[in-house]
Image (cartoon, rainbow, N blue to C red; front, side, top):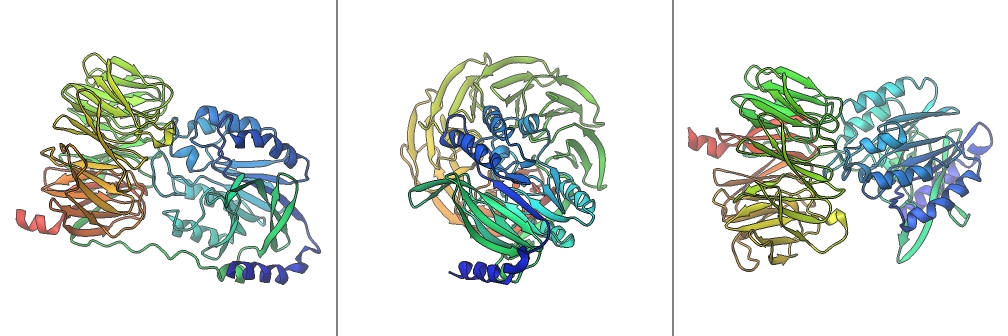
Length: 618
């Protein structure tokens, strides 16, 4: 009721604003979720015909144009959208980036840009940019490399034109760097921000910036479906927002003043993220990179190795606090570099696999395997096992020669494989968990959860293996216990809302999983039926991040999507929590000195330890 009152007041207050001035009419398409042959794909022909029949000045496509960002889906969406005769501006959403087999490169192949694009229309400049998340389940971020600098550069060039922001995510706390983004928008007096993601049309308050959320192509409400899009009319100081259905009917929803509007400020906006705090941790910020980080931090002899979204691989001296060397690739790095003897081995999106000398960063060898490498590799002996789209490889880590490749179809293994008893166990986004003989590369068995929905696949997992058992958790929220030798399912339970983030005790007897309610769960590896040792709540609430759990000195560490870390002892007692970032952690890596090294997507790397354990060591 309050929302209706606010919009009616806005309509009355600006009813005279349409009398004069240039008018800009914009169609907004968002959340198309196209898969070849689905209902949305079939409906797009009529959508484009209807848009082309009207005198729009611009068509905005605000992300989630596909379901999984696959090449076939992007090609299908492109073939529809290229038929729009009006000027258009298109950016991508989380469904193009989270599950992308190409690391986002297929979007650029079809649409000619990486999601950052501008369009001048009359007295307006529309600035579109991606807001992630990229490659893994996490909150969104509008800072990938130098993205904020790019956005500001475009706004500086606007001159006297009014600026309209376009991205898929709402600029609330769904964006981890929301504070920086909205501060930039307010600095340049952005008229409004056009978004999607929530599927239902809505007016929001983005720190005093009007947030105009478009409806999805297909909108389901109480069992009924409607197809349509949003229409925005910019006139003088006002924006009039309507909903256009495919049958041609149009319904005015609300109107709002551009930039600052009393009705917008009356809408509650998200509180700012809570500040950082240590809890019972000893913490030290080691790296604050200019680019985003999507890989784990590796430490050896006081040298920290990591990669970033600018395509840089860096060796960083943690004592001298300086970069030892940097090696540049042309694309973001999403696969954690692997340390092996004197080498750091980097899997890339378009340069294959490259081994660098750890001391000086010089290239030692390059394996130019086709395909994009997104998942993490594991070394056993002198062999690297790592997957790309359609294949799992065994590579000689010292020479770079391919020993064998195992075909897995059109999808990719995104997590990290586990090696046990001469077997390689890994999951892929094709719905299967595989077991392959390490020596020959021959398949020993495969397991499926029975669902054909690939987004429920064990694609981004680390199988936990001990005592002849394999334990996996996938987005289907089941814990599954499998016999390592035969691949036969022993038990499978959906009792807690688990999802991908797991760990295992050093003795292999206990399996740990993080729930989507911010809890940690302990389960015996070898029980013949599902049994819980304990479950403890970290007090976080909802969480969907992938970050694996790490065990050190009988303490289990886990991290969430908002930069928090929890330490829990082996008996299920919560020791402490701390907050070190606003974004998700990528991984937790322990060193020999009792420290946990944590990289966060926003570009920071922290060294963390427990005060109590450090005191005991002294």
